[in-house]
Every structure is written in C-alpha cells, then in structure tokens.
Amino acid sequence: MHLSPIRTLGAAVIAISAVLASPVVPALAPPALARPAPDSFADLAEKLLPAVVNISSSQLVTAHGGQGPDMPVFPPGSPFEQFFKDFMERNRPHGGDQQPSPPRRAQSLGSGFIIDPSGIVVTNNHVIDGADEITVILHDNTSLKATLIGRDERSDLAVLQVHADHPLPSVQFGDSDKERVGDWVLAIGNPFGLGGSVTAGIVSARGRNIDQGPYDNFIQTDAPINKGNSGGPLFDMDGDVIGINTAIYSPSGGSIGIGFSIPSNMAKTVVEQLRKYGHARRGWLGVRIQQVTPDIAESLGLKDPSGAMVAGVNNGGPADKAKIQNGDIILKFNDQSVKEMRNLPRIVAETDIGKEVPVVVWRNGKEVMLTATVGEMPEDDTTKVASATPSDKPAPPKPLELSGLGLKLAPITADNRDKYQLGQDQKGVVITDVMPGTPAADKGLKAGDVIVEVQQEEVNSPADVQDRVDSVRKSSRKSVLMLVQTSDGLHWVPLSLAPNPREPG
Image (cartoon, rainbow, N blue to C red):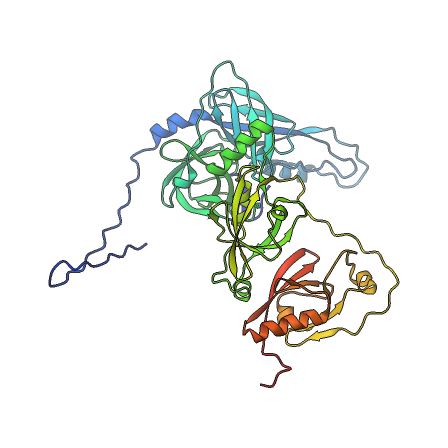
C-alpha cells in the first residue's frame, strides 16, 4: 500500500523589560540552548535490537495461462519486487499457446517489534496483508511461525503471536505526546531484508496528515527509513516506542529524510483492542462533516473558521440522539477543541464506547452545550440514496433565476426526479442551470444538485431560496450558506453575495 511519492514502509523568545531603577535597562532574551548529541547510540541500540524482528510473509500466487505468468503483487518493503519484475519481462513468452504456470509463493519482508515476552508482535497491516503464511525472524536468526491475532486497515496496524520455549526480549510503548520537534529518535528495522539496522535522527514535525486515512496524525522524522522498515519501531532516548514506522516521502523509493510514524498513543489503543477483540473498536458519533471555511464562518457569525461542520446526521445514531443538527459546527468534543475538521474523527474514535461526553456546537449565532453517548463505529458507515422511480406528473414550471448568484432553480417534480435521478425522498430545490463565471460556478455547483437548506433553514421552492437570499443581503452579510445535495453527498456551500441587482444602486 503506497501512494507516490508518499510510500508506506515504514520561537523566538521575547523578554519584557522590567523597570527596576533609573535608567531603564532592557532585559536580554536568554540564549536558546540545544542538548548536545549523544556521544554514541551504541548502548541504547544494543539494548533494543533483540526486541526488533524481521517479518517474512508469503502468499500463494496463481498464474494464468496464455499470456505467461502474472507479476506477483508484493506489499511495500519487498526486495523481490524489482527482481521478479525483471525476471518476468525477460521470460515473458511471445505468441504461441502457453500452458498455465503452476502456483508459486510470493514473499515479502517487513519489520516488527515484540511488546510482550509471551511473543506478542506489532507490525503494519500492509506488511502481512493477504499473507497465508507469516514467519517472524528474531535478532538471533531464530524463525518462528506466527499467527494473526488481529489487524486494522484504517490505522494500518496488525498484531501477531509467536511461541518460543523461553520469554522473549520486549519493549514498551512510551508517551508520544511528550515528544517535541527536535527530540532525538532511533529507528530500528530491516531495510531491504539485510537484517537489523539502526538509524538516528530527530522529530521533524508532529500531527502530519499524508492522506493515508481518516486518522492521520503522523510523527515526521528525518531518521533514515527505507523499504523493509515498515512496522519497525521509532524509539525515544529512554528506549520506549513512540512511533511505528509506516511511510516515507520519496520519488525514488529510498529515504530522503522524510519518514512518517504512527504515534504510540494512538497505536497502543488499537493494539490493546486487537489483542482483546481481534478488531479495532472505535468511538462513533454518526455525522458527516466538512471543513469550516472563512466564508462559512462569516455567513454564520462565527469569529474564526474552526470546528467541523455537520453536513448530515445518521438517523438513530449517537449524534441524532444527542440532538445534534445538520448545520451545527462542532467546536469541542469531550472537552477537546476541534481546531479543524480532520481532528474530530480521531478524537471521537479514541473516546471510550458508551461514554457520555459534552459536545459544544455553534448554532444560531451562539454556543450550545449538548451531551452525546459515544457509540461503536459500524463496519459500513455510509448513507445510500434511493434510486429514482419515474411517474407521470405535470410539466415543471419555468425555472427561477437567482439574481447575482448564477443559478436557475426549479421545484422537485416527477420529471425532475427522472431527469436528474433524484431519490423519491429527496427534498429541496433542484438547480437546473449554472451560469459560467458566477459564484455558483466558482463553487462547482451544477445542474442536478439540490439546495436543501439556506442559512440552516429548509427550502421547498425557488421562492423560498430567493427570500432567504434577499434576507441575508439585507443583513449586510458577504455570503449566503446553502446545504447542497450533490452526487458526492451533502455539502455546505457558501456563495458570495453581490448587492441585490433588483434594488436601485
């Protein structure tokens, strides 16, 4: 699993002058001090290396006849990928009838680490994904067959079990929240299948989002991480695991000093659940959300564009039971500030299932305090739209042009349901045309989209939309907020307002 060039593997201080006597003498800022690099990492590495393992996974690959054998699919980190590619190209037949090739085993390599002397091993899910045989190779080259306890695709974590006739060396999770940008770290893994290797660097950044999943919160490090390091640990100077090396940014596939690790505070929660339940159990609120833009914030009287805007509520879900409404902006959840949209899924997921938590939302120009009971995230948290069923109805009336916004609107009729493939339960006002170069066109609106609400009030006719827009113009706001149903779901869309062209200038 990797995205190119993202590849999965693996203040100035201002002093305030104090007036003590005349004349005034300005206080000097204390110099910034850096802790010197250790003379050597050898003692620490020697202590940690035995708990880091190589993971070899294999799967049976069946080739198809007629066109020669297919290229096996290797998880990232395999040193065999390029070898097999070259081999297949050299031996691919040209013409003639070919017999099906016999099945064979494809192998890949990664890293992991032991967290319990009984043989509990943590690695990345993509290291063992699809494998039917998993072998853990200890630091002393002992090979042990592993069984899969549980895995989680969303966080890219997996837990394995091996059995030995003696307690195994192990390491423990540390507190990743204590790590600061600039702190020293060690990465240990099995790059390119060469054996245990140690690299050193610093924490380059925190809270990185690399679009790998809904819970991205990676630690970035410049400690060299290469293919095969996937699933290996990132250690602090106390020898605690503060990250799991998962991805690198690299145009070439090799390390350029930009690696990403799953924070231990997130990983250890998932690992505990995998050990206990065999799968991850995450908190669930049951809302669809979108980013709060400056235009949206301005249209709702919110000072700063922060929080997560609710663009849909699952019927019967925790949010629905807590009276969270479409159009609310969630500012705090369980006493944690929601600075931006992508913070909320992670905060909710890490909250204990069944816990009652306070939720602060922005509604009707003020903060409202609610209480929600966190549910368990279902396997499939999606909302389906019913298919359209044509029926015979009178022809729709002439569309209404929304002055200054570039929209033509019509009520939802049987013909429009059929023409734009709208669900039978779809409510609102359908957009029949969008003029180019207008605010609506700039926001990507198109014919067939449906305006469901304007300024958090339902609309059922083009006249309703016009009245709401006129009301917003009179209040001197710069934009009007519309809830729009598109083919991708519900979205809050702010449209810039020009002075009403129907009024004299």
